[in-house]
Length: 589
Image (cartoon, rainbow, N blue to C red; front, side, top):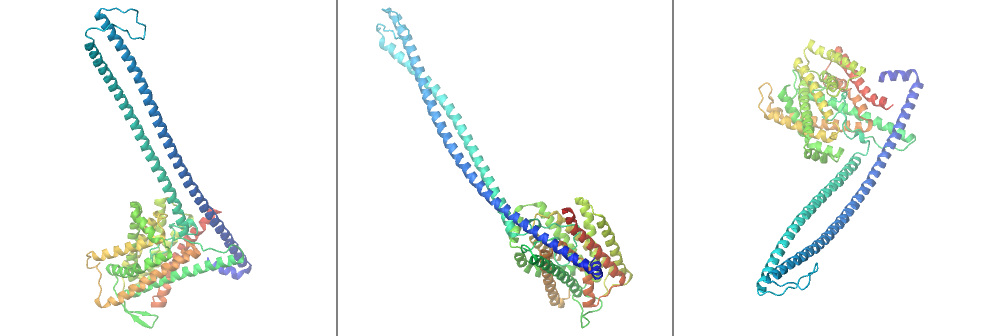
């Protein structure tokens, strides 16, 4: 595509000028879109803060009204209770007076009948008779008083029972009201805490990532092309667009310079990645010592093998784990807060995806080291690029993301390129005396396991920021490497190190660790300036640049058929990346 643009610019300068004008107009529209989105986000945050304050005020008003209603209800209940008691006492007094009157009338009537004295006049209704006192008046009076006492006792007992029942019922109602009050307070408190946490989380996310909020978490694509030979970064790290001036030619010039700087940084990251692969190739022994720039020989440090690959990975990760926390804190200040939140979440599904992706990446790293030790680094990295095929097919099966026509054509191109790149290795003995079958199989295994890492990372996308995700992956791979070396292995798989080469192995591990961090840092800033799509397109140059540096540094030559296969794989993977970059623009249009 780049060659076609160059030829077209040579043939027709006007087309190049129009393309530049279109690019400037697109950049200006993107700048305006960025300013609009940023202004809308600021307005939304201001609105959310005002709504938060209004909600807090409303909640306080509701609490105050609730307290007033509660006090009024208690006063009303207490007043009603006192009035009811007074009514009961009044009714009780009336009943007692009526019963006492009936009893006295009855007793006096009996006394009058027993004494034989008649009344001088009829007894009016409601009045007491006045009989003549009998001889045994004292005994009758005592009996009358005793009967009256018993009647009053029974009445008071009944009244006491009624009062006890009313009191217990009132107590139960008051307890229910208190329970409802506590439940209401808990609901209000939970609502306030939830609103406060959501607002604080939104503010923290905006302050930590004052760019496009959609790019705050990794969105791993099935067509991503960033190989993991040096850094287990999520394939699409956050794309933080850099603030640009408001308008005018200065905005266009600055935007173009930032994209240009991002492309240079992405190219630098690919260069460091290629140097890493060549240094790893130099670190592993071969049949003949390797000539560095044709000036001096380097015999290598360790022989190719599974155990030695584990040891090299561990030496490299010691350096990475010593410096990566500092780099992660510099790139993302909230990294430790996110990691602490991950440990406190107890999300087993997320943990299974994080640990599973780290395990697949660990296997991929070990196998790619084993492949580079047995076959040329350029061929190994080219065969490793089988992982886009596995990733696309896995996404189709797991997520229903059916590849497009270009995706199917790219899969066919990658397959054909892999066959062309690997065929000369089987037709001729590997340079340096490596095992061709082991190298090709290890490269294929590295690509397949890396596809598993990509799929698991895609499942965990959006739940964890890419930088803490990478730090947890580094730490997990370090643990896996240490445990793998601690477990007793067979003689063919165990590390085989000459005690005299430990200084060279430590020095090589330091170089690999430093190159890892440099590539990680350059790729991160490249994505911030140029975007993940353009950075991934530059990442497709990895196999070609690895082969180029292998030829320049250690004179590792490739056959023409392998070079053709490498070019086919590179172009096919680049087509996937370009399609992935253009697809969102078509949807937006």
